[in-house]
Length: 98
Image (cartoon, rainbow, N blue to C red; front, side):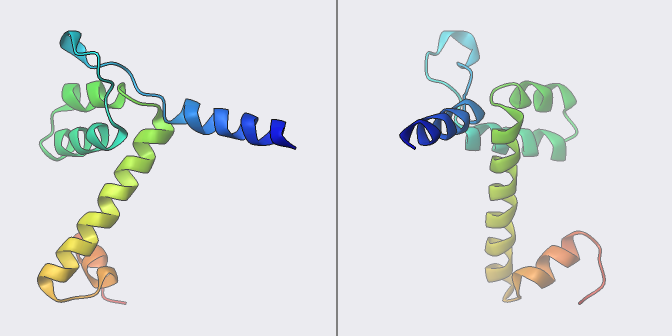
């Protein structure tokens, strides 16, 4: 039974594996740092920077980070606007009100 937990834990650790930063800094990139850089680069249409950030972590970790960033952004914007997160998300995507 414990073997299954170790195996599952290893898969999670592999998915969250990060690469060391460029420029000799030994600290690896954080998955949220990668997500923030990736999303910012995409918003500013900087494909090279987005590709670099995408290489800092595994695709699964980047996906998780981007999802977390999107959730936090929608909640923050909803609070700022005094609207529901659903209303804000639909408005940002150009969808009609539900």
